[in-house]
Length: 501
Image 1 (cartoon, rainbow, N blue to C red):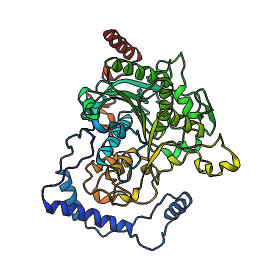
Image 2 (tube, one colour):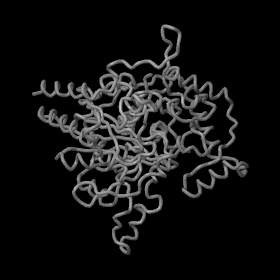
Image 3 (cartoon, helix red, strand yellow):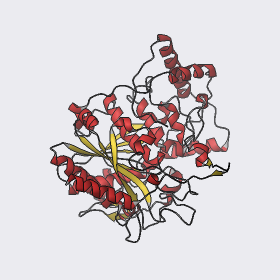
Image 4 (tube, rainbow, N blue to C red):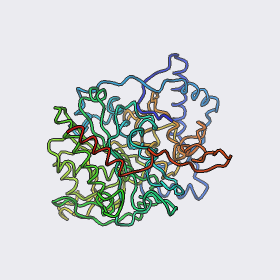
């Protein structure tokens, strides 16, 4: 299945279809902005309302709308006949702005289309870590990537972005990680310790010319179920680096843990990613090219992205480094934030108002306490967010349901849908947003019923089973190339290094 990888600006050719789409969107937006005044009658609604007031999540009980199904059907039919791609815009002359040279000052509200496209591009690189991940606990390869690095983007429909994957990243942890690492129930499995946690990719020659530099991307996998892990997350801060920076204990363990007796984590995730990034930078700098590093991730992946950025900025001089994270939690203390700023790391945090994960850890004790620094002094144990913030609101989209849905609020596809539709805080959802709306329901149930998109529809055909020659349904063996093999990956890199030498 090919996923949409751009923000699309194609408009229908007829005035009638344009007006139909806009009238549907505006009518539904008005219905959502004017909910009934009656009080919720069931316990679930009352709990949702109480939680909304407590955490200021800006929730609403689902309003009753009178939009006729035939109007939605005509809108859907028209939308399906619209092309899903548009020509790429050359942004070479403003790549430093996009990369955060001015901390995105005056670029987020309103959000220009060329920046919106790039944010979605990096978000889809992060989404790839979910789409390719084997979550099946009855698979011997649970916790691995279902595809080898050479065909990852082809399988996920991301080749049009003009990047190629150069290496995979594996991680383990020495502390308890509830729902952070997936485990197979089988005795014979590919790894009992490690999980695939992301990849390193680099722009090809054509994309490099378009964006104005050779861009190295690191995409970190996150978590898809926020309701389990944030309550049990370790609250302990641990020293990171050589100075005063401290970061959350669990994030630090996942990034730095290794064990010589394991197959995939004889080296830590930190060592793996830094070795590959350093190799690529040296290779392209020797050719006289301008190189940048863009690190992206969702949820837990956004936390690992900040640790990665801090380490890269501390060890590789004169490298433009940008972090674009989605729904990421707080990671460290004030010193960690200040060190990232001093090192020149640019961070753009995309957050949804209704998502609880960006409020963790430090729901109460966070950067808001800085107003009392004159009284208390700098509190080293207080968690603090980093960088610029692009804040989105579930209520802005006419396609999304109202009510309490923690998993839906946190879903990366919900984030990308809202980025696609965002122009400014003073305008409504973009009527010409072209990213496929159906993608929102890949792993949740956030789309309004009128769209008739099934919930959690993204899965392997027949849930991974195939009918064999005897007519029996069985789990197939993976293609040899798609079976994780640290030996094969190491031999490939050795060959490449020799060829370059």
